[in-house]
Image: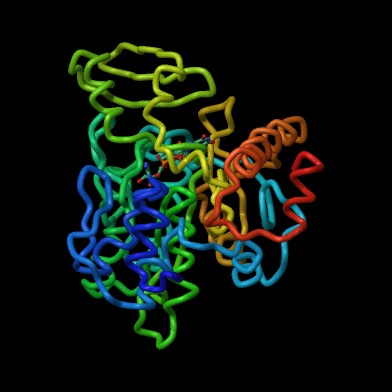
Length: 360
Ligand SMILES: Cc1cc2nc3c(=O)[nH]c(=O)nc-3n(C[C@H](O)[C@H](O)[C@H](O)COP(=O)(O)OP(=O)(O)OC[C@H]3O[C@@H](n4cnc5c(N)ncnc54)[C@H](O)[C@@H]3O)c2cc1C
């Protein structure tokens, strides 16, 4: 029998199958959906047939080519990085951002700048102390943005703050999120924007992080044990190590030690670079003073051009010799997802399958 009720589809296709990414987007949209320890749960069965909860879920059925068409007005030619306009190295110029930020602090500098010029009136971020369970947060000032800087390597239900902010009357919101959160925010923007008072119309800027996987909350118990409860100043995950900085000391643990905390849904994620964002931001994998920046939409391009002009950030051409490394890392992940998992939420066309056969 075909299941049509949204909450049933969400439970059967996403929650029971452990595909929920804890993005937080459905929480608060419906009074029956709550979050506990980053897990999403229904406290009551809702009977709405065509509810937002399933329609905006990043692991609800997603027609990838259709998303491309709706956002970029064209199909992609690059099956690894998706549609984009420019690939760059970039960094924040002000030291406040580079000191507090994960790498150069580019993301925080851009969010703070977008707030300062009125492009957005609030930004949905993931705050909290490094090494402790993070919290969704709404930033309205530069100080709020700086307080939420730095990567939290777990799946924070950040987007529940978006729903709260919309309820509170914010009209122009920015979102910084993992790729799954970008997809959820973009679905909301595309599907619930008419009439103009719907939530989709309040999302004005979407900055996506690169993310190959996020960790479950149990990671923080492991961390407390390894650091014997010391105060953690910052965390980084490189290709080889988990790097934990406590007061003056640096602890390096092989990344293999934390693989068991990877959220199961991340194995089926086809989008390591936030393909549907306005801007995608990641590490450079070799110079922590810079970030990788992918400009995808006109909105993203305008923000970058203006922030360069106003001296907020600087950019340079992505080094040609590093492009194959980036393409290989992202391409391999996508190929693995399609070949090992054949995710049922993902609707692709023939060109993707041909790209996989060619090695992406
Ligand atoms: C779970 C996770 C996995 C990642 N994996 C990779 C990877 O494999 N390769 C790679 O190149 N980059 C990865 N990144 C991105 C990288 O860690 C940096 O966040 C990114 O390069 C931006 O750097 P920045 O200096 O501009 O950050 P900052 O200026 O410090 O800004 C970081 C922003 O990210 C937000 N944020 C922090 N944690 C989360 C979270 N869990 N969910 C949503 N938003 C969050 C913060 O609120 C802040 O606004 C990952 C990030 C996360 C959160």
